[in-house]
Structure formats: structure tokens, C-alpha cells
Image (cartoon, rainbow, N blue to C red):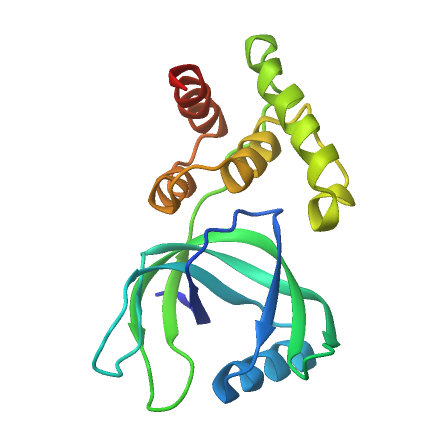
Amino acid sequence: MGDELPLFPLRTVLFPGGRLDLRIFERRYLDLVTHCVRNEAPFGICLIEEDSETGLPARPHAVGTAVRIIDWDQRSDGLLGITVEGQRRFEILERHAPAGTVQQARVRWLAEQPTPRLDAELQPLADLLERILDQIGGLYGAMPRQLDDAGWVSARLSELLPIPTEAKQQLLEIDAPEERLELLRQALEQE
């Protein structure tokens, strides 16, 4: 048994607590946004694992993040712009795509680990994140900072560091924030 969640496969990875601006132009995704705004319902963002050249829906990775729309506006280019915020991770148990509509998935919610305080030896990662946030501004610059929270720091660094998208996906699939931070620390030391 699982919950049903509409999917929005993308070429990006978003973690719980992260924010993302999207431009919506396809009819099926306009319908999805309308439904989600009216019903205050979430939808799932997943990294595309494989595109289909035959017109079939893209196959997403099995682990993604449920998001809620926190803002929307009509853009100057005529497209709908939305801002979403990651809520919680899920695993796709099965998915289907009725013709011409958004993919639907039966999902299992992944257990959220307690968010531990950041260990002193990992403080340099929080300092790095703070410098990055100060430089980029935008959606991330305005966010309340939780630089002593290992889960928050690991998620934001995973989203913002210039690492391959597949590596970001692997980090999303890790349950323990400390493990994610340790892998990020090791990767930065190798650079």
C-alpha cells in the first residue's frame, strides 16, 4: 500500500527544504499546477533516469522529493512561473502515465532521520555553505539558515555544489545526513 503522487521528472535533484523555480508551459503540467494550488496538494520531483525517444514518458529515478508550491506568477514571457519547496523524500513503488497526462506513482515515504546538530569537525562545511549562500542570493539567499543542522547543511550543499547530477541523486538516496556530509567532505578534499 502506498500514497499516490503526480510526478514531474526533471534534470535536477531537489532535497527536502530546498527551493526551485520552474517555468510551466505544457498543458499537462499546467493542469497539475492548477490541481495542486486548488487542493494544496504536493507533487513529486524526480531526476530523469532515461528519456524516451518514442514519445513515452521519461523514466525517473526511484527516489525523489515531494514538493509544495509556495509561490506562482505569470511571467513576462507569458509562461507560468512557480516556486516549489521540497517537503519529504519518497520511493516510487510503481508508476503509470495515462495518455496525455502527468505520470502518477504509488510511493512509499522514506523515513526521515532525526536531524542531528552539526559535529565540530564538519563545521568547515557549514562555513563553506554560508559563503555560498551569501554569494548566490536569490531563493537560497532569502531562506532561513540552519547552519547548525546537519540535515539542512548536507541537503543545501548537495544541491548547490558543482557536482554531477547523478552524484546528487546518490546523495538524495542516503538516509543519514552525517553520511552525506562525510561524502561531501571527502569529495571536497580530493579537489
